[in-house]
Amino acid sequence: MEYIIYTDGACSGNPGPGGWAAVVLHDDREREIWGREEETTNQRMELRAAVEGLRLVPAGSRVKLYSDSAYLVNCFKQGWIERWQKNGWRTSGKEPVANRDLWLELLEVSAGLDVEWIKVKGHSDNRGNNRADQLAREAIEASPGGNDKGNSTGADQVKGSPPEDNDAGRQGELFSDAVPNVNRGLRRMGLLTGGGDCPGLNAVIRAVVKGATYNYNTEVVGFDNGFRGLVENEARIMDDLSVSGILNRGGTILGTSNRDNPFDYRPGGGDYRETGVDRSPDAVRNLEEWDIECLVVIGGDGSLLLAHRFSELGVPIIGIPKTIDNDLPATDVTFGFDSAVTTATEAIDKIHTTAESHHRVMVVEVMGRHAGWIALQAGMAGGGDIILIPELPFDYPHLGEKIEERRSKGKKFSIIVVAEGAYPAGEEPVYQTSGGVKRLGGIGASVSEEVEKMTGMESRATVLGHLQRGGSPTSYDRVLATRFGVKAVELFQAEDYNNMVCLKGSSILHVPLKDAVSGTKRVDPDSDQVRAALAVGTSFGCPMKRFIV
Ligand code: F6P
Image (tube, rainbow, N blue to C red):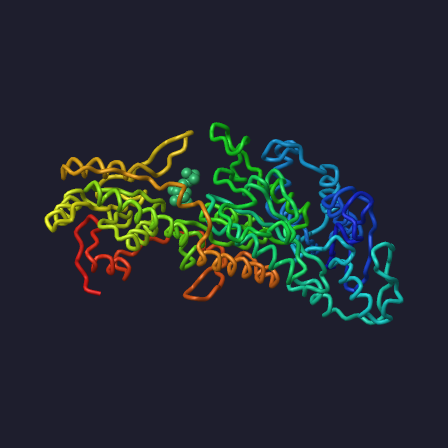
């Protein structure tokens, strides 16, 4: 015999002490059975609901247990319970497992059963209008005899009598993964900003919060400081007032971190001297406790990779691509890039003054990691004479020739724009180490030194560094960020999870998250951008065919 159980841990409306756990159980005769239990937290109620539901099923039965709790389902599906048992009921973070008594009960009651755990889409709203309530009400009303078999308003314990007429087809329809969002009421999404800060983050936060609250009856829970806030449960509900006046502000009002990995978590703000522990179960539990249906992660490749790992644990995710480096392959442009290029261009414009006045070779080192997008575009916009990018390893003799060529034409200065990831052919990129962490940086100084040696001209290096990540976003980034944020909310509304929003041509689309986290988008040396730069006499510090565009 196969049974279907639908559990919900907050169906009476109050997730706090004295709340309810509900079970809707269907066998081949379509009975609705409500189990009432009082528990102290959402998670305990959900667990209690599962325990009570399974108790109602005869030994040896096959059960499909549908739950809206990703945590509960994952605990079984991902083998966490076995791991806890092996670890003496401690999490991988060495903390005692919460609600051990109920987990033990659950193991005991499910022992003689063949239980398939299935996460249903969506969540209850904690206000007495949840899906278990709703489905049960519908089931009762639609069955012969209507709702005179009892009511299902949560506060009453109802044991519905079997309907005279069985309609087995309806059962699959109601309890399939494709359950429609019946009168779901208020929903919740989580939001965090991860990785390095970047102009436009606040514009996205504003778009997500306003888009969700104004249009879709959805609350946004903002986690502080990237994934750290998710692990530590530092979060708050964001209303539209909390995002007022932030459109043009740099940084992120939520705070961020590029050191906190929940799967390799170190205390004290990512202290690399400590040994990391897997705190992802805590992060998932926190999402459960907040009753969050989907986590929106605004981040670059590192944060989106973590988001992807959470999606593999069953957490519904929507990604929004952010980085000044513009190196994410699944989107034409990331927000923040245009602002960084604008800042770097302004800096190159200003550097021209000293270069011209002192007849110097001025080297400007820009960010971008292993992609040369910022260097290429700021170099082109700022009229850099030489642009050095990681995609085209340079050689010093070529570079020297270009400076001499300019000098012979009476141009007594040169501007070199160098990406932090650029390097001479046959050598390695230059790194600096601080606090035990290796970071790209320092190639500007090396280039400047070599240029002085080769040409005898005075040279200076300027590292733009975090200036490129700061300040107000450009109007382009504000618009892109707003479009990304709103698209993310639309995906949430459609429950189109585990995707990343992206820009393709002039359209905002979405791509599977798994495709968004593989590879790095780098400058194509054969692209029209590179050809255009060459055509106006810019050197890339290496032998290249000169193109006519
Ligand atoms: O990814 C953005 C970025 O600014 C890179 O361009 C740069 O290499 C890196 O972050 C710097 O990181 P941090 O702020 O940790 O020094």
